[in-house]
Image: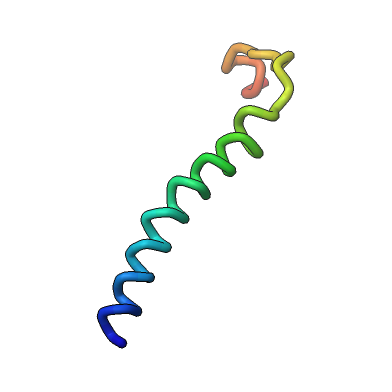
Length: 46
């Protein structure tokens, strides 16, 4: 039973990590608006 649990744990981690990274990328990076204003750093200090 220990081998089965270890095997499923490794399989779940190996499958869940890439899926989580892809979902996070598409939800938080790819879906952001494209019209982002880039301002010089001096703008924030004055």
